[in-house]
Image (cartoon, rainbow, N blue to C red):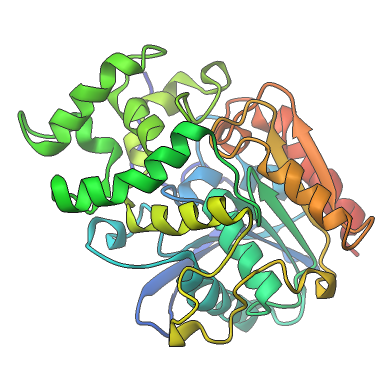
Amino acid sequence: METITRFTHRGVDDAEISVHPFATTDGLGLNLTRFRREDCDDVVLLVHGLTTSSDMYVMPEHDNLVNFLHDAGFGDVWALDFRMSGRFPYDTETHRYTLDDIAHFDHPAAMAELRRHIGDRRVHVITHCLGAVTFSMALFAGTVTDIATLTCNSVSLIPRTPLWSRMKLLGAPPLLEYVLGLPFLDPRFGNAPFLTRGWMISKAIAPFHRTCDEPACHVLSLMWGGGKPIYTHRKMSPVTHGRLPDLFGACGVHYYRHVHKMVKAGRAVKYDRHDRRHAGLPYDYLSRAADVTTPILFLTGDRNHVFTDSNIVCHHTLESITPGLHELQVVPGYGHQDAFMGARAAADVFPHVLDFLKRKAG
């Protein structure tokens, strides 16, 4: 089987690649990576989820989204690595970051750095998972502005999960932090030393995940799956399945507390309404929905076992507030992660995104 270097950019061909570090006002160093084949009026920004990274958009084992966009005429594509990125150590540290921190600090800083290089050109943002949730939060809170379009895969401002996931969101943080002494979960637990806590967790959950024999896949299902894998297995390349530990990083469990609060509230809400750092953010991120004029494509697979029908419900909700502004695309046979990382995503999924971008560009 093909061996692919961790954190490689070799999946992008015929492009100038440059890395642009920047800092958030709460003191974290983040990165934007630019893949420029040619200048154009419409720039695309790609935002990963928890716990992936910009790597999910440049995978060399199959047609990836960056090359697809380049070939379609969007020659200036950027990818963000924010604090949830598997390229950073932040989630293996004990922390109390919330989705509010990302909406308030990460995305505005990323947009400021992006604008420093591209000026006032149109920006189209394509997002996934909690990257989609947090960027939507930033847009609806007004911490980012002047976005031409937003594409949200799997979830946005109304996170909905299966019952088993709700139970894990509630119980996992105290169990892991205060009983097991682990502030994070890691797909690499399957490779942990014999009898360590990570090794025991990996072995304990293996009998409940019989769809494959890849320990990282089992841990990812524990981290995010609602009792089922986070993708449709037959949509994934065997090469991708074999390098899951390189494509997914550790997940700080405090994020689960904020997601649980949102699922319980039925919409994206602030984690702590008394946090003075976020006094300018709305408690209910949908409260200003009527003022948002950026068209959004809500994308989801019909086998999404992570956030189920979140985007369907969110589109329906916003349609009642701003009729005709946003769009919904349900992709048959796809789950949560395979919409961007699947072997045939360039044929089955990306054309829906491209059609949306081309109709809204210019």
